[in-house]
Length: 210
Picture 1 (cartoon, rainbow, N blue to C red):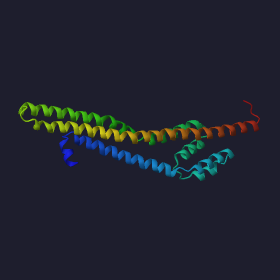
Picture 2: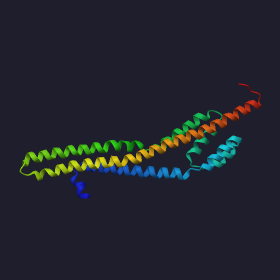
Picture 3: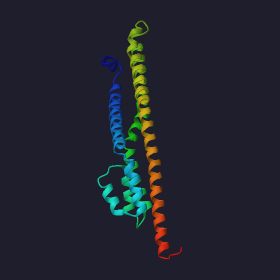
Picture 4: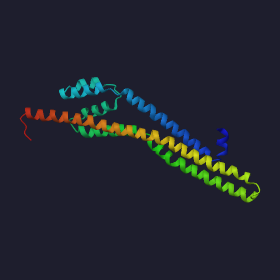
């Protein structure tokens, strides 16, 4: 591997940097999503919705205190601002959560594009080097050209390899974000319906007709 790296020429160094950055981001996002899954508490979410139907807001604060579940954080944020604008409060909290989930995704997207381009750049440099050697030594020594050809092939393969191996986790993480967004919408809508029913019921008791 070290010999192949050396034969790839100077472009292998930025490609190595790209691979290190990509691996670091993939590991970070993997641990992030494992943590999200580990902190997800379906029972507590259902309990908070039930307490919301009963109007037990103080109990919700106690139950949700210290929770790191992103759904619960969004719901609680809406509940705390229910007298002003529950929907906007939940939208703001959801936006923050989605931003956390999309963190570093732009880096992976960039690496998918940049790595193959760097590989092609290395290919061009290798071909130029081959022609320079060929012009200097002539066709009598074709073995002198093989170094440039090797450089061209190695950098192309490396760039494509980095991009291909990055596409899979990139698409997976994107699918997790989309799934989380749907779950957020589901529970935010449920809480909104519960709140509207409570408001309508209170207005009916007070004899308010809209």
